[in-house]
Image (cartoon, rainbow, N blue to C red; front, side, top):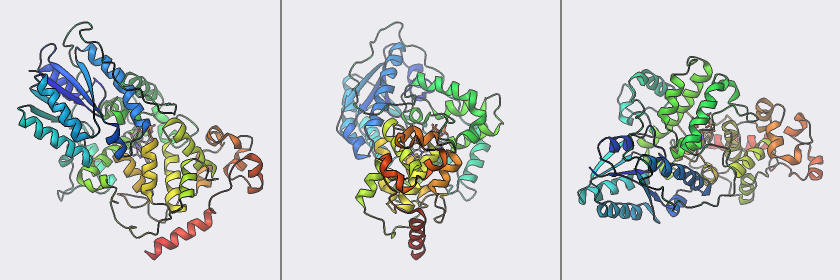
Length: 461
Ligand SMILES: Cc1cc2nc3c(=O)[nH]c(=O)nc-3n(C[C@H](O)[C@H](O)[C@H](O)COP(=O)(O)OP(=O)(O)OC[C@H]3O[C@@H](n4cnc5c(N)ncnc54)[C@H](O)[C@@H]3O)c2cc1C
């Protein structure tokens, strides 16, 4: 049966349930693949050029891998998802497709888009099949004893781990539909003019090489993961976001690791479960997709509207070295270390008193690994508005964070070169009188004063 597989954030051929099933049930030349290239729609979601670049890299390899399986990838460009969906259904009719398959996504607009696709498909006699891929289980399969959604991570994780043994296995690689180069990969994948330099794997083959490399050092993950000056984390986030590698593939690698019971492996699994949890929350609380806080505790907080302070934060010119290092790493590479993401986010919200949504937006525009659920969850955690969030009175001190996690100043030296001649202690908080000479700005705010102001404002609420 002629079968169309719609690729979105699942740019790979291994562990691709929709592709696997299509290939298993169709003859040579009967499976087609399609991707909707919708830059204006992504912009409406604040996804920037970095994320488009990530897709373009992943798609180039995907087109080749699919061609080797005898499947042609077609790319349709559209201004919006509804327009793209209509074009896709027309395309499917025109090419005599009988079935349409894809993997489920959870954002509000994504759900509307997929509903429209199913509705139009059925009107034209096209059967549809939707598979789970972004998270391990269907959200209804993980509920509390009271049959409610989990709102706290630890019990969610406990239940998740108890069920792991019954989780679905990664899908096998599809059998080639035709031998040789029956289909040449398509050539119309747009070149994206992103100005950064990626240090992350973005394609399926690069992601698997990286996973293999990381597996050799994963035992030290629980301590190394907090040190931004070293490569102590997997750096697989962009590949997980565009789907060049799947969650299941990462989890199976970890659970079958020879040292699977080590703290390092267990901690890494826990981080992947956090990712799962944030997607699960987006399913149960679709209002999160509209940037609503999970708990509207601080709705009346008098957020600062200081545009200059926001711009200095964005450009890495706050005068706080660890914050500026993080913001510059983000701009240059489209990625930032997790510890530093927390430091810069807390700094923006709790010391500059800016609305967390301004930071969420900037991250979305800059990150290669932008993933709405994880970004929203991370920002709401830091702003104390989310599930299991940091309590409002917890405010990271960026100077002591730098002392603990970048003790030699390696990270700051790399990203703030104007401070590189300073010794590690001076580098963390350079004396104001030396700054002009170094060409580095004075701090935007005094830490102690800003902290007191914020706590006072929180207490008033
Ligand atoms: C304010 C803020 C915004 C964030 N925005 C994003 C985002 O847009 N996309 C994104 O993938 N992650 C986001 N994170 C989570 C985390 O910072 C990144 O996943 C991590 O830095 C990616 O590096 P890695 O692949 O080396 O991670 P590793 O430490 O190797 O972890 C493995 C994988 O687990 C997942 N993961 C790890 N930590 C978290 C976490 N705290 N929350 C959710 N998933 C996690 C990621 O998919 C990651 O690739 C954000 C965190 C904060 C504090």
